[in-house]
Image (cartoon, rainbow, N blue to C red):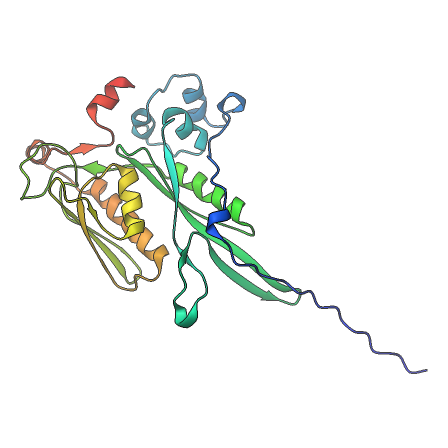
Length: 265
């Protein structure tokens, strides 16, 4: 008898498009009562030896536990950036929170989801984080966690020549951030201008506490991941630029929260 051919079973993977309206918004707050710190910085925060985020960043040590941010900044807010795009005719799909990619294997298609999160208290603190996982919820949790661990202080001021106010409503000087072919330029604007920027850039600047700004994007702006990274580079340049003492008072420059908030802490 001749052996019969064995038919191989192929696994079929059905990819269902994500509906953003059905995604539940979960508040990413940790249960601080059950938190057991693993780092020296976390133990000092839990025992109230360190009571402000300014003291944490002044130590120069990296933040390795997101519960540190949850305890010191209880009013911190989070949001997801539109870095993905749904399928559409001639590439005209609408923007989505999750970016979906696939890997072709013998077992079938293996999809993965990635997203970008931003956290901030709208008063000088902001953080950005990228998360990727096989499902949407773990990807979102990774992104929010990384955003809290990468929290930075934002330098604000009133650098517009058209405004003589002393309120730090904008940035003190023009900065340019770059990632790949994308460059993001931020310029100070007078009071009442608003956030004249792309929607995702405006989300980040709003959570950072900036009220008025001019911005311009050059390069392949369709790649939103590079746009967000270029914006992050521009915000870091605000901190790394050396400023003379005479300009600090002249441009009403503050780093991080306002003095009134620091006294409350």
